[in-house]
Amino acid sequence: MTRFDSSATLAKTAQATPTPQPFSSLALPAAPAWQGMLARAPKPAQLWYSRQADATPLGLAAQLGWLEQEFTADAISVCGLRPNCWPDGTPVQPQAATYGIFRQESCYASLRYQAIVGDSLLIGLHWRPQRALLWVRADSPLQHWSELNHVKIGLPALHGVDIEFRAQQWRLWQLFWQHQGVDVTALHWVDIDIDEAQSAGTNPALSPQQRCNDALQLALQQGRVDVVLLHGVIQPEIEPSAQIRLFYDLQQLGDAQIDAALTLPMPLTVDRQLWRSHPDLVLRFLQRVLAVEDWAARHPHATYDYIAQSVGMTAAEVPRRFGADIHLRQGTHLAFHMLNALDNYQQFLCKQALLPSAVSLADWIEPLPLQILQARHAAARALQHGSKMTDERLNLFSQDLNNSSTLSGSHPELSKGNYPPTLAEAVASLW
Image (cartoon, rainbow, N blue to C red; front, top):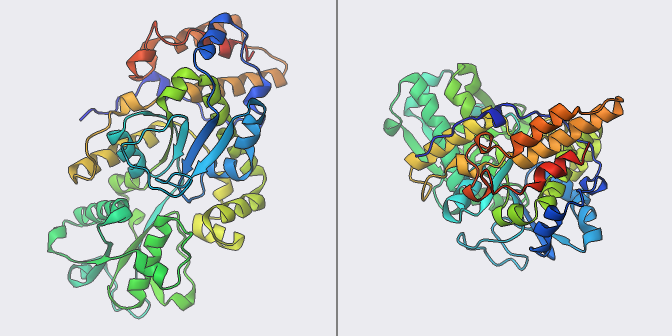
């Protein structure tokens, strides 16, 4: 398996907060080389995005109407797809590559798509703190983890879309019992179908992970299992009517592997061919997604409303489901700890034979779009304070863009000598 190798480029990636200003308001330079490159590839009539039913920056940008607004003047429509479905609801076969599509889906879905199709580039990661909590019934006599050796433990069933949720839970349980020195094969595991909760009245619009947690909680309430692990962006407070109580928080173990397993980011990817032929469109789309972070921080209640519309719940439920600070966690970055968590998760999936093949993260990651926009934001802030980027700093940045050694194994066709030469010119025009 190709191991992820951190580079100076990714280590230096700043986490600046962009402004909601459209990228198109700062025009790309009218350089003949840039114009020629775009002229050879006609602009697409449509751009697509696919997102998980979750509180994501891409989802908020779509709800706010920013994606459509950005491309209206270009006569380019921006259309949303249900994950793994075409607009008419027909399932998308994993082998089907789609030109002009952006995806913000789960780690498993993104890795599996890349392993099978291989036509996407990873341009950002969204991460929120997650928790892993063990729950028992309120009247349970269980008091200590050592008593769990002989009880029924609920686990999401291994079928259909439940694969990734079983994988995440199995990984956390393995790490927990490994820390305690217990052989997991000697325990009593009970498979729980997550669709059972929907038949019992759970909101079908909830994300698969939320439905998974609801199904496990229902099985616990009904006495079919004695303990369950609820994980994700969840709160430890449960309504008294649920008749269950918090038994243990896995983070109390202070285990670095468990902490890493709870640092699972959500990838934002783009079609490789679109970045190669129309980097300007990719930059403009990404700029709108990045702008969500600053907007959400300033509009907490509106953020709750938009998330509620996106995932199918009331605005009052959003803080309980996602945390009261969800409006402060809408950033898109490429931080090393996120990339490391992604790599560790992929290794686990491969060991469990849940991926058809390993993904070369070095080839998948493309940090340049995020770097360009962060540099542009830094320049805009400098201008606001009455200063300018010096020619020396600008030249160094331009050289960095065209130096293949800083691109962390980007695809060969965009290596030194083949990188669109006017990308550096485009960035230079921002100052």
